[in-house]
Image 1: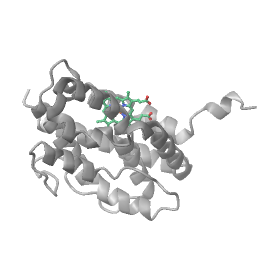
Image 2: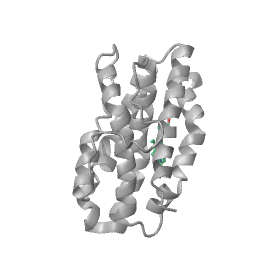
Image 3: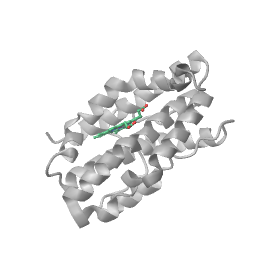
Length: 205
Ligand code: HEM
């Protein structure tokens, strides 16, 4: 029989959740995100947020994928640039290949530790959990005009929960030692921070 302790999340997930909870709140309470979840979001609001997400992935995803593909533990998921690019094109938006130079922290990550890439993976993969809520809301409020531009947010579809459980498993297997967990939390905070900078830099309010 399972003991109560067996139901506790692994230390890496506890640390990542607790360490980034404030930053997650700042992001999901950001005026740009609030507009998307409001009664009447516009296609422009949505396109602007997608553009920020694309910029986030342009900065972090390629190096993260290279590192995780070479890692001892498999980390499935988080290949999201193609769906972001497809959604932007569907909205008639530009798809820049490089980070916007005018937004802070644009330097691509140099050589960083595997644990840091796992911290990036946590943020980029976890973002799709809230995405399910957003996708349903956008489809309901914007109707057919957004139908071809929801690939990123519908991502793993009905498999989202299962995919997240798998991601959490691989994160927990990769991050066992406290120093590695600490590195991952710092990196996850940095990724959230860059997303906030992107939202702020493009907020007309
Ligand atoms: C309006 C925007 C957002 C909403 C409403 C939202 C909502 C949520 C919700 C409801 C969950 C928990 C899902 C569950 O376990 O049942 C979640 C988890 C998460 N979200 Fe968001 N989110 C938003 C934006 C973002 C963004 C932009 C990012 C990253 C850039 C992000 C990163 C994460 C992460 C990493 C988790 C996993 C937390 C954990 O369980 O360890 N979210 N989000």
